[in-house]
Length: 99
Image 1: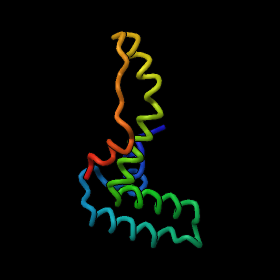
Image 2: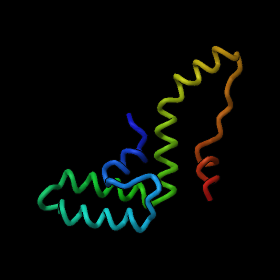
Image 3: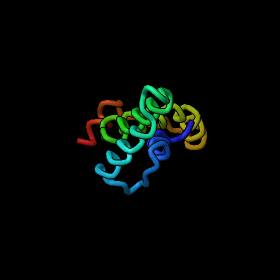
């Protein structure tokens, strides 16, 4: 699985330093190119990418889930090497750090 933020940026064709206005402009351009009636799958992909990039809380949630899926294997390696159990903050605590 790829980083959801990078995947959303690839779908919309925007760079990492794109402003919210540039993201919105590119989204509207793509929606005109791929309307829901003509290309429903592509439209849905574009819609979800824009939804993710336009909401910081959804970005935090997506990144959390992305790294959380990979965490068990990482924690096994870290715990085996150090002999210590790595503490983890609750999900809501990390998400609230963004506010």
